[in-house]
Length: 222
Image 1: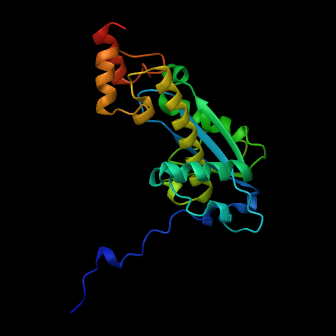
Image 2 (image 1 turned 90 degrees about the vertical axis):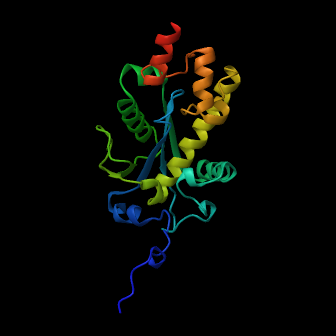
Image 3 (image 1 turned 120 degrees about the vertical axis):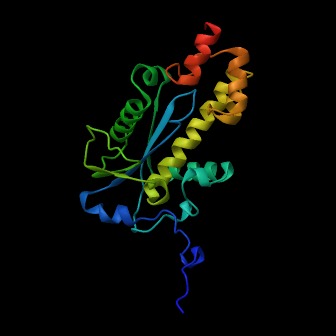
């Protein structure tokens, strides 16, 4: 009698590695690109581009435990952020709330991705972009990688840099705008955020083109 397959028969996910970097390494240095903050109602989108220094072709020891930033604790992200910025090539770009509202969230994110790649201190030969879009106008060829922050070590590094940088900025916006809770929910549509909107109305760092904010403006006349 044949045994039925079980979920437990599948090997555990490996996490990000350098397979894609090695595949495209013939083009030169490979950059990983990721964003943080497409979904929130407030604050900019952060985009990071990272070229890892792979002197021996292996994963750097200081990046042990690197993964999709959403899977890591805040403490681990901070440790990895420091290691990435200290030993590797990094560029960070914020797409402002004004740009998001003037264009749209997708266009603003793609603009920031292109700017981040162009701002790297070294010129990459190939770019791995988390998601389904490759920005037009990159300095080199690129490929979109679905769930890339769990597959490519370079994209995972970019995801950590973007996440940590944006979280720090949202904490500062929380200090500047008491009562909204930006320091805790980071601008996402949490119940506490909606309650603050209902009570206080929107502030300048809210994305007025997003439906919950537009509805609050209409309701409160602000």
